[in-house]
Amino acid sequence: MTAPNLPSSSPLGPSGSLAPAVIAVVDDDGAIRVALSSLLRSMGHQVRLFATAEAFLADDTMPPADCVLTDVQMPGMSGLELQATLRRRMPLLPVVVITAFPNEAVRQRALAAGALDFLNKPVAADTVSRCIQRALERRRNAP
Amino acid sequence: MPAGFVLAVVATLPPVSHWVAGGVGGVGVVGAFLLLFHLRRAVWWARNRSDVNFEGAGISMWLEDWTGVAHALLALRREGIDDVRAYYATRPDEIRRLRRSVMIRDVNAFAVELMGVSDKSALVGSLDRILPDTDDTFLQWLVAFANGDRFYRSEAHITRPDGSFVDTLFTAALPTSVAGFAEIVVTAIDVSEYKTAQTRLMAAEAEAARASRAASLGALTASITHEINSPLAAIVSNAEASLRWLRRPEPDLPETDAAIAHVVADATRARDVVARLRTFLVSTPRPTVPIDLAEHVQAAMQLLARDLRAKGVSVQFDAAEDLPRALADPVQLQQVVINLMNNAAEAMAGTAGHRDLTVTLAEGVDGVLLSVMDTGSGMDEKQVTRIFNPFYSTKIDGMGMGLAICRTCVEAFGGRIWASSAPGKGTVIHVLIPALG
Image (cartoon, rainbow over all chains, first blue to last red; front, side, top):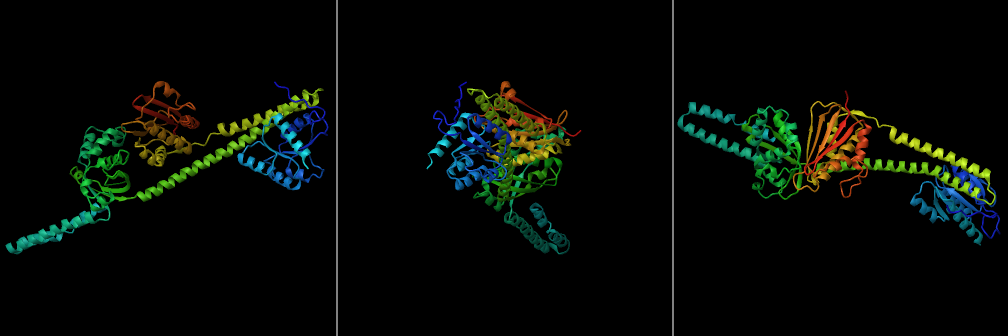
């Protein structure tokens, strides 16, 4: 078994110059929220959990997160609608869409609407890790 | 009834015969000549009137000689064979021989037009030439004769000399004496357009049913994917998280412990999903209802009629009388019958000789026995034992699922399915379906 990347005290790798990132997880499935929370925290991130897209939008913490991981199928507002709303309100906030029901049409729509990535559940930790790194780099490099 | 109409014209003659009787008795030789002249004229008129009716009828009329059939049926009766249908259903070669013996002696102008020929001489001859091998109405003719029916009406798919087909609806007054078999008048009208519309409607209905099954299967697959993937996703994330907690320079045991506890909980959830699915898909038997198998088999045949004809397959069907009602799910049963008939037709696709598909229903030991017999190339013993296995196929492009699905369906309503085959001769698939008491 290959050893996973051991997190240093900072989640952003050897440079260690940045503060831990805050990742918002939006998923109506409690077990998924708990699992992603543990995984992201084991990577050194801080995690904020939301059961609905509406709950995330209603939260007035500023900034709400450094990166959003959202499910697609949720009661009420869907992950794609959340993505569209965030694109208008916070265009610089990277959004990663994760779904348990892979569907090429949804994937195309999400990527066309500017999703950073479109991941299928179950997703490997390394994939999540790389994806978050990319999101944070993009955020850091944003004007 | 055009045949009856011709008789009605002849029946208008009695006034003439009165003249004859009166004339000879009272007026003498001159009068007799005069009356003979009148009589001749009347006979000429009557003959031409019937010609006018035969030729001028707005319907095709065929004068046919069925004497050979009469003798064959009489021979059967002498041998004490009463069930003509059962006798001929399993003897397609006999049927072909009899069909060849029927002679078309005359046809009217409308028939000439219907058949797209220039002259009636193109049609005079054996019935065999216009009633193709794939026609299944000939056996019904034989049964109607044997039953002593007064009329026979049916649809027939006949061949024009140019090779095209025409669907007809025909009627004949059946003879009451052997001599009458020599002059049977058959009337036929072209119903091709109605048949085409009907076939389109049936195909559309079948397609709608198939689409709805596919749609529900698609929805089911989507739902299963979602239900199974969600706990799997949680398991993977928790397991990877626990590894990461454990492999930190200072392992975080409480977090590891919590993540592993979640793995167990999520795995339990996945197991419950699978258990629910099993209950839904396997254990819930589809309701079986008492059904008339003959009716369902014939409906399936009708659905496939056009396909089978196109493949040059001639279909025979025989159901024993007074069969008990079978207990099965009608939808699944129809799928089984269609599947078996399609398989039989495909098994004969490369056959050079006659392609006979014979379907019979008989009373079995504890149910109704459906047999689907083909005259294809057959299979050896080793193949026969494997044909019901999933993904096993004798066809080049076969999925190998047809018979496996048939077996699942048949076993779902408590039946049995098996095959017997002779290489070079053909295959019979037997299905025993439970029946009411």
